[in-house]
Image (cartoon, rainbow, N blue to C red):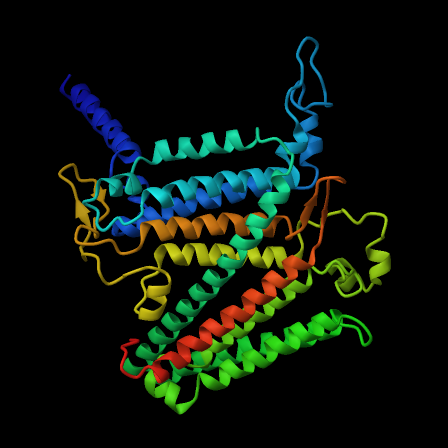
Length: 460
């Protein structure tokens, strides 16, 4: 009897703990995986998981043949297999393809906009709104599901056309944020490896830095050669020649500036490793922009390049609205997106300039060790009692922009044509990507020269 009573009490305690994880203020969902994590890190990881979950749903909905499979379900899709006496109410044209991606990402954007507005000017975890930020995960998930269901009832009308331009603007801003995160990652990488080299075995660590720097520049140079070879023509594609040449020149400039003596004196952490990563990323953005050119002569499909088929054979003019969902630049974009999203959730940077740009104050929170409750269960550490370590509102705004970027990436930045129900490449998407690469390079150049120009200001 005592044993049964003890088991009942233990089960009751476990259920109470799970309920507190879902509804309380402590983000317990990841305690078992990362018990020594800080409150701020776990919260960002869970919100990022919401974003990745929505991305996964969008990917599933856009898979080729998904609509055909749904129509086989009896009594589900309009125009599909029917069940006697049951009317099919679901419009499967809306829940699959680009329409589903637009609606799913619209729901995620609304969800993160809601929290971005609610969390404005939260200063510490003592603020009542911080409890909403760091807990109640079950109810927040229900809110996201509710918004998603409602989004699929939005009439077609001009929704896709208008939301396309929201996606263009949001993706432009998110590309800049990706560049900032890559700069921060490169600075942190360089700082850690240089410190390890100074502590011992300097030859090994410096060789590693040299290897990756050369590798990044080699890949960037190979990309330039391939872009000139396949995306330009001797008597055509003048815009592409300008894009490649201008970005190549700008990348050479930032690489030279990063190793100037005055820049090194003012910013010892700057170097060629950071410049090589930015150069490689710029070449990716340039390639991604050119794949949205509606001129098929200047924008050959990947299939035609691999199989050595002419563009006229690979892309017949009879199907201009066909969308190639899984192209190479889209896959690379998703990989970079996943990396930047995860890095934004766990980053702990000492770079003051990047922290100001990303609205984070990583050194401000209280540092604590792993906490173990009286019940023996491990808790995450509330490291924000004295002050938040990141701007709650800006973090949600960043995830809002990420939702728009995912929407544009999964639909290849194609613009929906309401009259023909097709997807078309547009030049605005090309110029948005190219201009974001120019602005990003200018921003990185500013981080190099600002400490030299403003000598009286502390940029460390």
